[in-house]
Length: 297
Ligand SMILES: Nc1ncnc2c1ncn2[C@@H]1O[C@H](COP(=O)(O)OP(=O)(O)OP(=O)(O)O)[C@@H](O)[C@H]1O
Image (cartoon, rainbow, N blue to C red; front, top):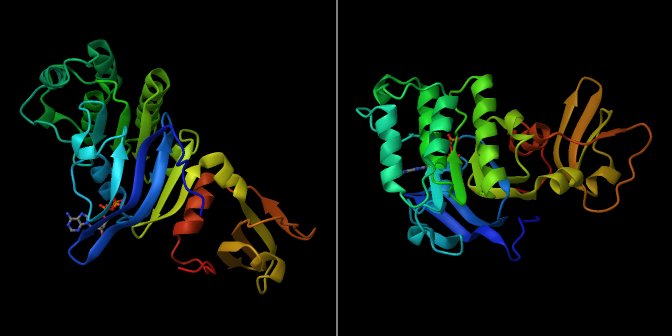
């Protein structure tokens, strides 16, 4: 398995990183590194360990095994506020107004806070400065929480489902805000999301978790290049195909479709069709439990 670049310039690194809750391993033996400035999609089914990983990287939780490094330091000693974590619970004070919340953000991040930028982010969500947090809709809370997270221009941004509960228009706005921040300040972004379609044009790296294990990690374009979506006549998986990693194979009517990870040269016979997979096709092939997989577990 190719892992994210573990040579110099990593903003985030994990080695043997694991977290067990009672008898459940939420994350196991995670080894990867994320280069500075990368925008990484953290994807996986429900319960695959995404939030656990982001909490460990944010220093909000302790690993059971291994270690993580963020900006060259133990996440628990992270240089505040160079690392921002936006959790799924969007921690906000219900009794404050939007303006008071932003003021609190400024007070907590005096050295780095960019007031006009934070205000612009809040305006993106059409938030009235005098509105109380408890009166905001789920989407409006996301905008406010994002303004708090991005306001200090963090070097590393850990976002747990920032798009959840947003309509398609708002998802686009939020993604553009995140990308704008990354482009402007060179921030490293790890973005956990189930909205894989939205991530395809946004992220340049991928970290795919499956039952707490890292199944795929790396730069997105080469990862996509390593895989092929092959379509041919239904029947046994031919021997020339079995020489590679068949991630998923499926029969639909008279057709056999297989997503394959090339392990060397692959000459596709003329009667077979070969396509480059999209990001959603790649992710679903790895995660779909109904797959007739021949990859060893
Ligand atoms: N505090 C906890 N105590 C016990 N089990 C936990 C705790 N936090 C997470 N888990 C378990 O660890 C596993 C991974 O959970 P995690 O929340 O990291 O997954 P996730 O990929 O973020 O899921 P989702 O997509 O639903 O947000 C799950 O089986 C979950 O039940």
